Image (cartoon, rainbow, N blue to C red):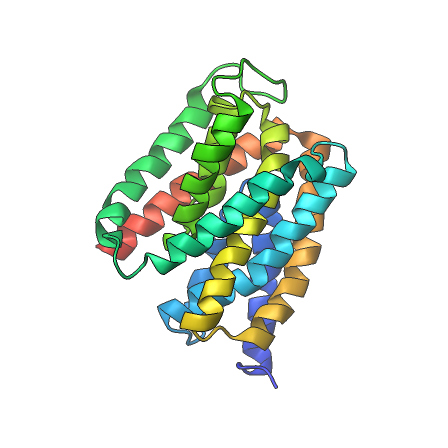
Length: 252
């Protein structure tokens, strides 16, 4: 029935739960699931495609959890989410023509920069700060740019959204996290739609991992709402450094 054996499926379910937990708080769940999928025999494209299958469940669950907690009004996010969905499809379609190898060289530097920003920037907490970009301009520039990157490559998308919401949107850490999740869901969904035509995801395995993601995301979002920036900031810094290290390792 599943594309993998039962013992491997159990390992993937555990990875899905852990990824859902981490992703709901700081993003970077793919750091867990993609390597595990590849260790179980999936080729890189299948691993990325399957990661999108299960990732949409975690992102959707986290978005609903934060909305239920009153940290984001999902109705006001419909237009930005639609833009993210379309931009992600466009990014995925550009994989064959964009210089992704060049982009990958700069990604570790960007991720280290994000980690340093959140680790050293004073005054970053759950309180909103001064907005540096109008919401309409943010929606028309940063949202499609980051979502398009998610379709093109993907690693660090949640961190990039977080950085944009905090540094340009003036959002507090918890509010930025809450607003990131629906956009991340939309960009995941757009990339998945494209992968469904150009790749071969492990659909049944991905759906099973998606169920595990739901439980992990609910726990992660619940803790994030209770603890706030004191939990989100250190985990975001850790996942950003971990992603930078992984990208460097892959290149070497």
